[in-house]
Amino acid sequence: MNRKILRDPKGQLLGWIQSDPSTGHILAYRAGGNVLGWYIPNFGPGGRTFDNKGQPLGQGNHLSSLFYR
Image (cartoon, rainbow, N blue to C red; front, side, top):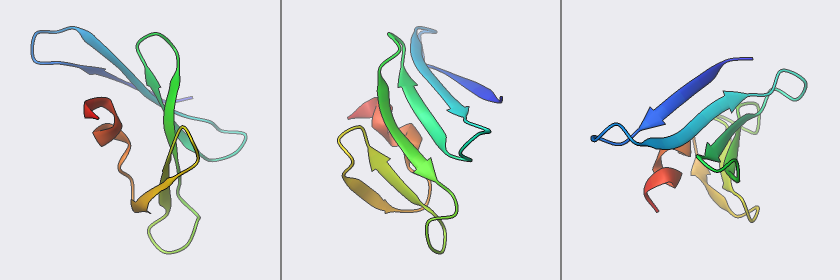
């Protein structure tokens, strides 16, 4: 399981982005552990990103933008 830690410019933990090997999805978590959204790489060309309400955010991986919404 790969995990990328994200911090703000002052070094505070924003959260992390982690792959789920069982589904192939990539999930974004807020520092408290809440899921912000997920990216499905094999969902059409370029994959698709969804927020935690299931709303599509567009084609491609936009997970890091969820930390600044």
